[in-house]
Amino acid sequence: MLLKLFIENYALIQKLEIDFSTGFSVITGETGAGKSILLGALSIILGQRTDASVLFDKNKKCIVEGVFAVKGYNLEKLFLENELDFDDTTILRREISPGGKSRAFINDSPVNLSQIKNFGDRLINIHSQHTTRTLNDADFQLSVLDSYSNSDKLVSEYRMEYSNWLSLKKQLKELINIENDAKRDYDYLTFLYKELFDADLKHGEQEEVENRLKLLSHAEEIKTKLMTCTEVLSNTESSILSQLFMLTTSLNEVVNYCESIAPLLERLKSNYIDIKDISNEIENLNGQIFVDSHEMEMLNQRLNLIYKLQKKHQVANINELIELKYSIENKLNNNVYLEEKIKVVQKEIELIQEKVGKLAKDISNSRIKSFTTFEKEITRLLISLGMIYAEFKIEHTFLEDFSCDGIDKIRFLFSANKGITLSEVSKIASGGEQSRLMLSIKSMIFQKNLLPTIVFDEIDSGVSGEIAGKVGDILLKMAKNMQVIVITHLPQIAGKGDQHYWVFKSVEKGISRTGIKKLNRKERIEEIAKMLSDKNITAAGYQAANELLKN
Image (cartoon, rainbow, N blue to C red):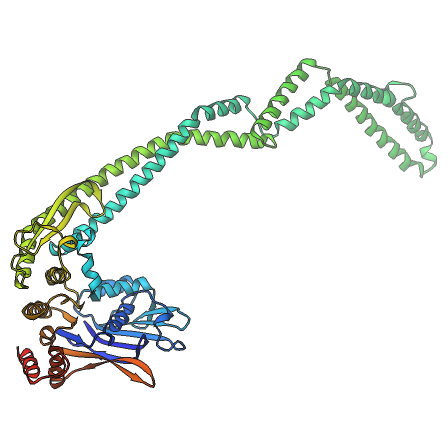
């Protein structure tokens, strides 16, 4: 329930604070006094977007703050979900800076706009003239029926499963598209894979083949040079080894006579051994090298295959070809995986579709069961509001497929006059008739799904006299179970309020300002008398105002 509304630096309001009470509160005032400004300010703390254009003083920030009593409305879970401390008295506040930036707070804790809107939706419902235009909106009609039939929880569960169902269908479609693309490429990929698989490429192979081919290509030249080395080192009388042997023999004959010769002799012996080893290795190497034209041909073919594959696949080396083979293999294996994945998703869709179908059927049955009583109640209320020939029906058809609201399509059909065929509300109902129809609908659904507070902005549009009084009776009945705040121009409704607030406009230092005042009984009589009179308040006006308050 709204306990207090504080507004500072908003539109024509410099600063004001209003205390509200339980029951039925009415707000009156001349056209243009600023009643809509109050609603605008209230909408700000309920999450409506705004900017710096609303500032009364463009150099100061705007503050709108609402104090709410929230005990007993099962809001503890909402506080917990938003990581906020629950308090029986909760404060919603918005601040708009001169630069247009907005900040929101709940009990002094910063929150985002969607959070404060979520809280606002659970605390207050504002019915404006614009809301009446939603009477013909299909979503609104279904939501009204769901509220009346207590199907909200079922619908919420259904929408969650429906969302999952849509998500899985989207996933299936994407998988099938991927599979189709893969199938189109399957034969080509298989050919590429077989070509690389048959090539049996190995890491480092290319370098080995190139080196072996280089050796075989120069085998004759290599053997000639090796043979020359062998001759020089060991195969002639004047070979290096023969000369070294002669040197070591000579020094060995005189080493005992000169100590300095011994290290030289050792060095010669060491060199002799090294060169002899070199000579043996050269001879062995020479024996291993053959001119093999057949092997050269095979190696050239292998190398040409490697070069061809590198060029074909635009890669730099054999390692990249091997990686490409594994990549193609994975793509081919994915085809098998995709087939299995598609089967799994299809099964999941079947299972969740059963849930969606069952929930949709349960919701539809719940809605259909409520049709008759809902139609009768609306018709009864319309008749009580002076529309004695009113008829109200719900037209129902089944959809061919699931929608986010189930499998039902409904239309509210209405007629206010005898002998006139039922038709859509927007096509047949006047403004006053629409207002009375909307009031009837809201009075029913709010009795079943109570919010702490509802605000009506000129719900009495297009009605007057006795009917206005009956509108007031309905509002008064609603106020027994919730806080009802009504902005009205009708004295018949103003007279039924438990509290009466008067909105006025004043001019100070050449600047218009909006203010609000809670009226005492004497002031209420005078205000209602003004509403009953044309210009000057008459004695009859005072008397009628007094009678309205007594009733």
